[in-house]
Length: 273
Picture 1 (tube, helix red, strand yellow):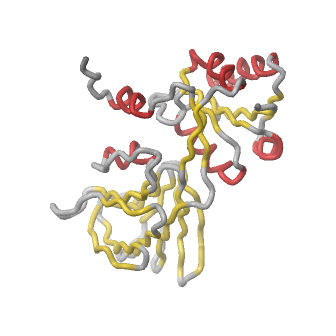
Picture 2 (cartoon, helix red, strand yellow):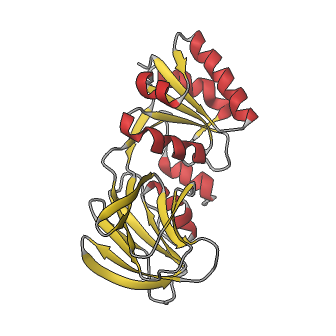
Picture 3 (tube, one colour):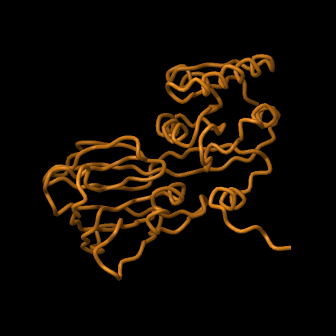
């Protein structure tokens, strides 16, 4: 089913490189071609295997989202919400995938545009979330939120997290947001330490457009994309977020169970007999 596989490793990580070398040898023994480098992967690969952690998979997803190449994650990190194949099971699971034995799911991303006077000054894609906050100080920011051009509210808070269902178990969760199953078609808005007792997280339909107008024009306000890239917000600029047009397709072992992952990673109680 998969004839050419691209392997992505965690930068400057000897364990990731060594594991990838072992995987490459194994794949070649199975008669599968292995490629590396973004351009070679975009042109030739019909599957990407990420050898790293969730951070490596987030970056890979953003890089290849428009190429419609499914992604399998080998977990060398701490959590493994996305890269969910333990390295001890790597050869077994990869063999199963090569035989067509896997679960495939579709996940959405967010388009994030920074605009000024109706013109796009920066455009990026988030797999987990886009976070608006102040870079170097704990001072709150003030902003207005609009959904589909309708005014929602004015807030004073440490920041705002706009999250996909995938990102609902990341920063949004630690900020009091709800867990969204990946199959839910929704966008989440979670305020960071809002200066009001009545504010609660908000879920809106996945087709909604979110507009954030920062009223506080002091320097230091930043949009963070998946905690990996950041862009400054200047006076008069706005942040427009919507569901991205392309989707990511994740591969999992055939017995993949989302709720088992949640129970394991969040240390929820075991099922009672």
